[in-house]
Length: 192
Length: 268
Image (cartoon, each protein chain N blue to C red):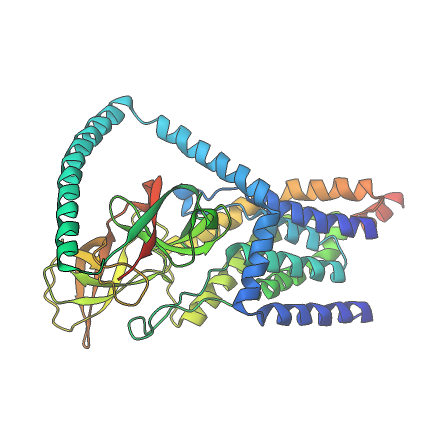
């Protein structure tokens, strides 16, 4: 169990490296496969709560390091209304929230019904992006929603969800390697 | 809740609070360490993206490329003539300044860079270039192309830099409108992910007499951008009860950009 949990943390770090090879699809409103989020969400349903929270912290802090913009320093007399940015570290809380959402399906996953969790990765990704966008809108003072934004969130969630079976298979292989069972209740029922 | 989970949750919240309260220099240190750690894959990923883009460009029809080449050749010839004239004027200007014992007014140096990555993040309109601190690039330097303003340097790293594009909401530019006394603040619009994003020019006067097609240039005020850089052309004007706003089409086609120039120094 311990070795499996550690391996999922390393898998998350590997996802950050692999994410660099995933470009945005300009034809799909710049949607992309969020590999880091996918690995986190899939792992979250298979690990203990403390491990999930550790992964949320690592995932959130590194994701913000990857994405956050520098503040613009300009003459306040000319640029009297600077555009606000989100604080560094906010993604940690979003990752944590999505992790708890995924753990809600843990009882079904332990019974071997991984496809519910796979579908939830798409929903969780959509909710993550929606929360992210709402926070940006909140700190900037007005809420603008366009078709392009909805398309970006939908395509990104769908593309990400499509790859979830692959990540679950990878986690299954890791669990087997470290003598850990992802579906203990399903195995128990089979033995009966 | 199990005691272990409760302790983990408290530690998680403490960690999140620690991250949320970090100052800008520490955030930058974390970012530098992060990008240093992923540097090998970042380089390979960027190279892969560039190759894929080149392959797509190569598939353009050869006739189209031939026509483009002959246009570029004609343009080069025209620019060479202008350049020779400009050099003669510059020499004459220098001689006259020397004669009048004038202080040198402007020092302008640029670094050419290739775009290696587009839209590396979900929400921000940014791109990455293959020049960084090793070539003298620092934070908030203007980035231009042959057609006009592209954006500013957001975060410079050792061998690469992130550019915040003018189409991003955070990138504000103080501008003036050609042939009119009007000026305002231009910025990108949130959620403009389509191929032809527009910019919003705010704080124009209530009865601004502007027409579509008028060009918009940087004003040079505010301490970020040099003056007289073309930013775009006015598409439409919306009049409000207190002020007017205009929609502006960027001069630069940001979806089809290969080389950019970073302005290193400008002494006013």
